[in-house]
Length: 574
Image 1 (cartoon, rainbow, N blue to C red):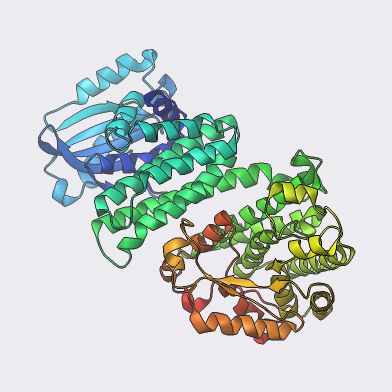
Image 2 (image 1 turned 90 degrees about the vertical axis):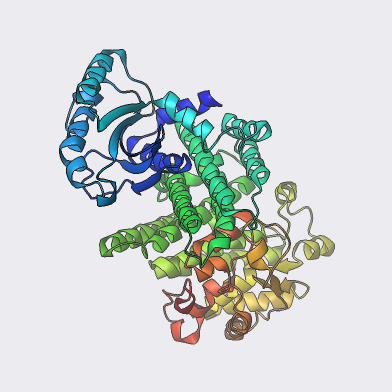
């Protein structure tokens, strides 16, 4: 375990990686962090500042961080090197930046790096720290070995991470090239932690930090081997588990609540970093090239291509919505940057759709979740209306043809073998069995009607009357039990809005809107109440639940029908 963590630490970058891990570790070791890394402000050599007990005496600890091994270049090669940082700490930070309440405490400057000190610079480092040490100022080195020991003794100590847990963690890391297996072991690790909402706050804080650090280690190793699939799926699950730990502290101004909220934001940031790496490196560079992503799937089977492309589109949509969500946190410049990133994600998604005909019709009904996520991204970020119309009308046309010819139409089963063999035959029995229900058709019909695409909407209504009279047209809405079960999929929950009449598009919209207004159970979810609405969508994507119409129905009302561009989520709910 220690070897894994040492190599992980050595591979971390200085900015937004090692300096993101350190405050969590320092807090877990019992120190009080009073300054964390910030962008856009002068740090004066200090990346993390904390106060805590050291050999029975309370002291101030000032951490200066460098990545990897400490080389001669890192020691004194430029203004960002260690020696200039140490001099700036002594000349500027200590006299002017330490809070008044800590001014009389002794200071320990901690030189922190993920690797080790190279032999060529050891003498210079030792000479400098020896010369500068006084009665009130001392120095420590936290190299990769020390950091790993602190992690094992603190956040990941054996009492908290027993042998069975370590086994699951090590297997998750070792099997990164087998994403399904790696994800299963990471999920097992989280289940083994199984800290309930009723557990003491300090236990939930520790569990959240364990999840964060375990995910980070998994991410860095996966990045090194060039395969982010497993950590992406693990990061979704980690955010959902963290939310369960945060929920009991909602509305309470407690130290534990602040600590849990901090870890949650850090986990969301890691999730976004993983998603950006996966999407920006593997997907968006090929988005505009005809069939390029379809070929990149690496399978000749159209089912494989279809599943992968819709999965990628759903992930891209989620990343765009995280950008839109983060626009509400920060100043005007950050808002503008975040919304621009969200709009760019939408534009790339449209390019994917136009370049890959496999995205013009799902192979199974559950892919309506990915369709809805991308539509909600449009409502959230804005963008090319023509691209959305093209996509919706194309899906309606292909669905109409596939059902009428009993060839390539979406089926209710998610089983991979069923999808590969579809259609087995064109018999009535097989057809009715595999089209027993649909969430996709009501979704398409409502959107086409709301966007005044009457011809395509009416065609789906006619199809339902003539060929799908046996099919239950339905949507899914949360209920009063959903907040307990949604995030970790612990039990069946929610309610079905069934027997929807898709023959009348405007009537369908009114029916859905009335059902949403009647209960408002989605807006009662804890993630919605606290403004963390993407977590609901993340849970729907991860567990393959339909996206609640609360996220899009208001945009399809008659007042917004000409050009719906806003409505996810409703303003009064967020």
